[in-house]
Amino acid sequence: MTQPSFVIGIAGGTGAGKTAVAREVKDAVGEAVTRIPLDNYYRDLSHLPMDEREDVNYDHPSAFEWDLLADHVAALLRGESVEMPQYDFTAHNRKPERLTVEPSAVIVVEGILSLYESDLRDLFDLCVYVQTDADVRILRRIQRDVIDRGRELEGVMDQYLGTVKPMHEQFIEPTKKHADIIIPEGLNRSAVDLLIKKIHAEMREQEEALA
Ligand SMILES: Nc1ncnc2c1ncn2[C@@H]1O[C@H](COP(=O)(O)OP(=O)(O)O)[C@@H](O)[C@H]1O
Ligand SMILES: O=c1ccn([C@@H]2O[C@H](COP(=O)(O)O)[C@@H](O)[C@H]2O)c(=O)[nH]1
Image (tube, rainbow, N blue to C red; front, side, top):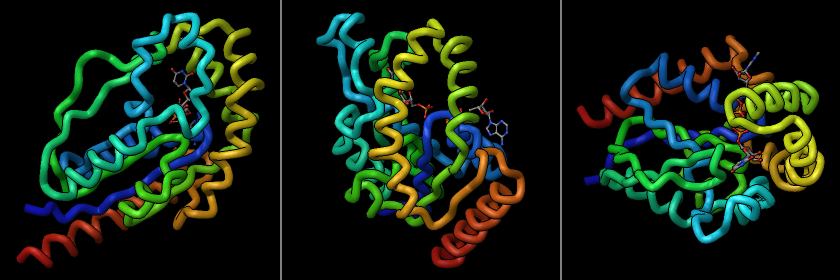
């Protein structure tokens, strides 16, 4: 059985506020929203030792298992549950366990390159780009990586200049052209409220279509 779902892709640079927007949407709309972090679809790197995993370019499109993510979104739209991988940023690797995700009325796929891959984008009803200046994003990232992800400041700076910034300019920022909505700064109250209103309107339409 197919599940009528409203699928939203939320992209934007590291630290832009994508996760904060997606969480706010889930908190406001509730159980009907399933959040699918793109980070969970980083390729399994268990075959590499930690020192090699530390050097991987995690901001290049090749770092993600796109087919698996598109298969999972398509399965949810067919009304099937999926076993979503989980990611451990401290280990730079997938966790061994998976999380069962059930079909739902609203699916939010959120991550740096959510709007990059065309097969995935074709499954989205609404494309959102969170636009935040690079200086604000790097300050947020330093705070998060050092405090939450156990990284050294020097490593965060090297990674930012070596891969994060150039990949942002080459691959992430250009996906803004696919966006239906651009949200400034992340948790922008007016923009997020409009997004929540749009989701409620789509859910009402789904209910009316089923009645
Ligand atoms: N408009 C905002 N003003 C201030 N801080 C914000 C805003 N939006 C998001 N943040 C904060 O910025 C940090 C990074 O946001 P996050 O959603 O994790 O970014 P991303 O998922 O894009 O990497 C978080 O601490 C979040 O609470
Ligand atoms: O093992 C990893 C995997 C990813 N990263 C970095 O994470 C960000 C994406 O997450 P955001 O929440 O959107 O910031 C990406 O820029 C990668 O560089 C990592 O450091 N290690």
